[in-house]
Image (cartoon, rainbow, N blue to C red; front, side, top):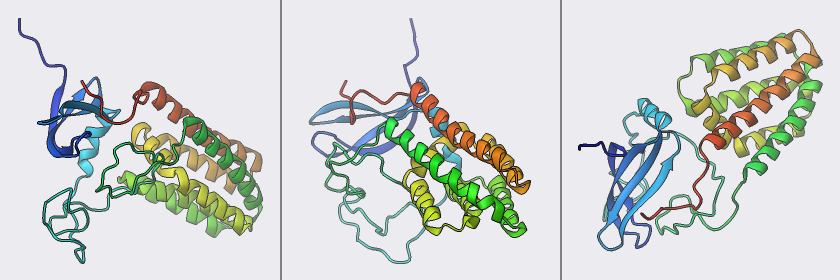
Length: 275
């Protein structure tokens, strides 16, 4: 009796053997709303690895594809081909699409051609990320409390203008910058430059792991509604309501992260899973 395969073929790509590091063909497959890479090395055999925990999100991001950007100057020549000629070579086909902050530098691949210089190092746990959110709450609530009495019509209009740009923006990789700009527009009048700098540094340290991740998978509409509520409370000089809304806003990021983590737990061991 005929039966369907357990996965849907998505695309063909090139990868490396996790054992001998040889460049080989690989298939990207969709199964159980997850994305897997399956490859076979002539020397080492078959391998399969989970590469994305949400197939719907993975496929939907294809609409943001655009032609590669030709570099102003090439930094290398083509000899052995990608990925061996890593850098801005004449065959470069990418563009700046999403900034990356590594939350786990303990990569086990040890690739000699790694562009991110991965090495044994830190690996943030969910608990550590949640602690970052606690730090955000402490710093940002203090900054907003000090800023509200000093908010001017100009600073409120600036914050509102950022939210309106946010509404029109369809590029997820820009949402992080707009989110940060909105919050800093409200905190700037607190007249504590070192406090504002600490907030900026803390958000930049984890925003790609949290803000972009949560925005893409959960959506921005709820976050934007909360932004407008916070702005309205600030404009009304209602400090108590503004602070309560801000704390709830940051806590929603924590809850969204926990839900996604529970729905798509990480694999038991990193790297490729041999079958």
